[in-house]
Structures are given as C-alpha cells and as structure tokens.
Image 1 (cartoon, rainbow, N blue to C red):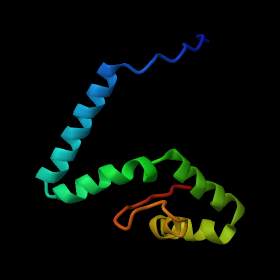
Image 2 (cartoon, rainbow, N blue to C red):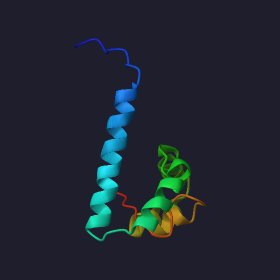
Image 3 (cartoon, rainbow, N blue to C red):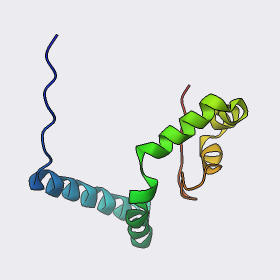
Image 4 (cartoon, one colour):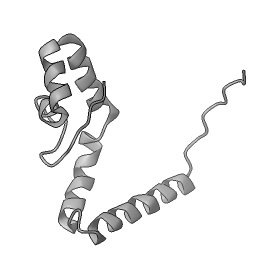
Length: 98
C-alpha cells in the first residue's frame, strides 16, 4: 500500500487553466444554444453561493432523517431539493441514485 502524498498548493497556473476551461465550457454552451450569454453571466454570479458540496450534503442529510423527503427525492430530485432554500436555481436539474 502506498503512502498518501501531501496535497500541493494551488498555483497561478492552475487558476489560469481553470479559467480557460471554464470559458471554453461557457462558450460551447452558448454556441450550441443551450444557454444564452445573459444566463451564463447570471450563473457565474450565483455559483459561489449555490454550487457547493454543502448543498448536496444538506439534501442527503435531510433524506437520512426524513423518510417522506427521501421518497420525494427519489421520485423527483429537483423538486424535492428545491424544498430546501437556495439548493437549486429554478432552471437547475438534479439526479439522485439510490
């Protein structure tokens, strides 16, 4: 069994590469007509608050303690998750696999 390595620091090059990939993805979505430029801009402003692993954890934790919520989540993940404030934007889609 190999010994785990220490995490490395994020560099300016890492951030620049992420920015390039993000821009390419945004441009591809716009070019294919899947979103418009205004929607892309709005998503970018919402992302820091709404796109967090903590949101998914809240959904799963609720499903653990609330059997009725769990059933709603399995039946329609997006609708059930929207019951929890600020989890999904109105146009968001969620999937849950048991």
